[in-house]
Image 1 (cartoon, rainbow, N blue to C red):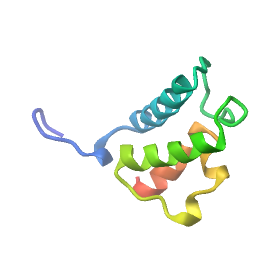
Image 2: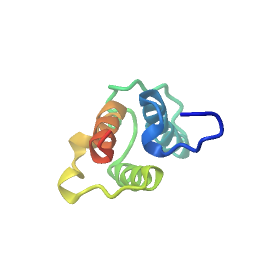
Image 3: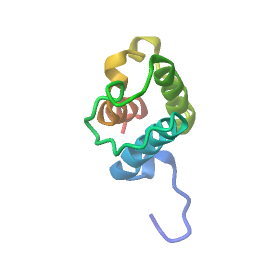
Image 4: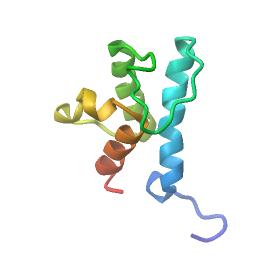
Length: 95
């Protein structure tokens, strides 16, 4: 990419994608007044996210990455951790 060129979501780095997912999780935790440092493989439910939070997280991921998560991929396993969500997003984006 050259200076001044615009970039798309697909041009962003792997760490950027991971950070965007982590930021979504941090926002949800903050809304519930949960002040924890969550690692990429930490179980989100065990760290305070409810089933309703998980639904909101799915919607937030769709909005953040401008994609539609197929019904078959809307499973608790795919939203168990930041790393799992990142893997799902990467697969859906074809990255």
